[in-house]
Length: 339
Image (cartoon, rainbow, N blue to C red; front, side, top):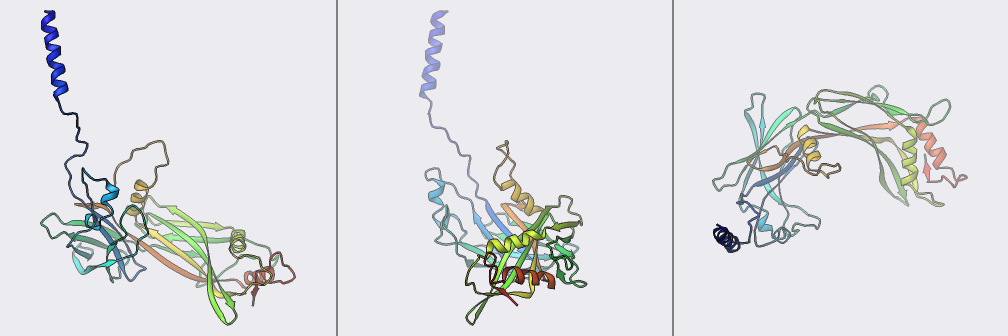
């Protein structure tokens, strides 16, 4: 019996050592179409990035990424379709190829292709993106619903039309109340204040700007949300002081009559989810599900809505800026602001 066991072990060891020791780590490769498109109601041109996945068992991905032939299709047909409430196509926009500049990185800068259309997309409207590879494979499709974005309810520019950061009686810095109203299908929004002023050197004048983030919020219910927000007035003057240096001989600076832009940016739920899923991992869990809203492909086709509300500063606020930062006798704050 022992001889039989020894013989069996010898045979088993021989079989194991005679097997190939190379393991195929890559599954059978299937080329996929990658789409990245974000249509924008505030733009007169829509852009879409379309590439293809690639794999070569003999060559590293970084080396392959330096060859544009591995990234782009030779021939492709892309159409942006506008749908009505019955989901019928009412208008079509063919997208043309364009070369765009690209910063250096892992992928080639030799040829950076994108596709564009001069279509002006409409609010509260659904659009589909169809990509035909012209090689008999299934057409890649993306769909996005364009929302009405968000509106500025307070301060009411039609009634008051000014932002007041200085109390007219005490002349001290005060806070300003904002109120934002989102439409349906907004996944998240943000608001930014931009302070614009005129800088004059000799006879040449230039508009300069300082961006001050106000707030951002997620809207997981996708319902209309009335969002009040208190902006601390001191943040405005801190941003002004941080971005405009003190100088003994500064250029002349003038506060514009309508010198404040409130930039309202809204994105749909698909964009928010895609960004969160594909962003940096900052928790203990190191795995997460893939997310795409592309049929017969991967990536994202989503929408955003960017609008700008122009508004002025109150007279007391402008007077405070000039008195504080335009007084030559107070060189510790002097920044050249004048009437």
